[in-house]
Image 1: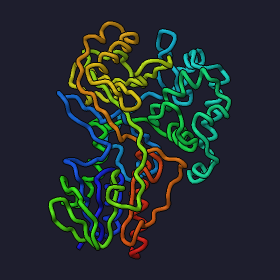
Image 2: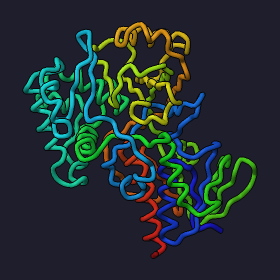
Image 3: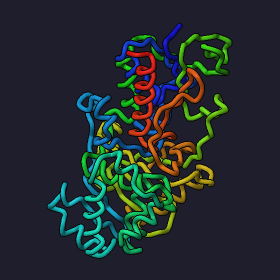
Image 4: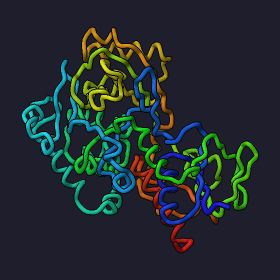
Length: 409
């Protein structure tokens, strides 16, 4: 009999297993699919690395710093800022603390007033005050409400904040909690934005590699929970004194768990003969029209994302795009031709990835104290915490700590 059976080999489940094993408990991780990572997966297509939706690691995440070896991941960093498409051309908006040389470009970019840019500094300072617990206990409103209350102009919100934060939260309306706004401002201020050289799936792979051999079982779909056992769809029973349900489908297994509401994203990937930008930065659509929210040339950030002599262009569309693939691709090409010129017509379409369960909606936003939903059964995942890599890993580690405390190790 295992000490703990963990259902789900996403970041929450793998981090939970790591902590349990360092605490001396015997556990197994059951994954229904053919690979680990949950929503953090990377597909290899014609030599290109396609993350399942545009994803990044904020290196200041406390749980990531604790459980990941950044050097081994060979993290590749984005520049500290963005390029904003508006008024017919790209404008640079940079973090003056990280890129002081771009201050003049940032000040004259037509995305907001000088006062707006000063307000970014005051919001940044506010987000860094106090502890993380203090931040998540502050009065809560929507992100849009908080930005307006902070004094940002509508032009600044529409041209910069909405495409930038909308892309982070997958929330075009900026209904996400103001606590999340301050949290991400803090993380962006205190660390880098990066991706592993081999793609985002390198993160769960590193977590799994540190587990004891045989800990993770793939293609092991759970059919039901039984008394001190988990029954697989194959009929096999796996006995365990405790069970952690660390899958986004927990509500399908446990009646005590409410199914989360999800935000969707659509990623459109193109291969280009040359980068349309030539620098490791994020490009935002500041026009307030069109389908494209943001664009990144991933091979400018991490060259290993594309074969030699080619560039990988990642395009993000918020929500579940209703158009079929051919129509969506044509729409994106038309928009980006305005940005980058006629060369867009020569780009080769690689894949369109529709992620319907990309980020859970969290309102009100708190970091739930781990507790068993029934005797011997626990739940973990970012839908119980902040909707982020940090939230998933923190939740998994927190459940493991609670179990270790319960058993007295």
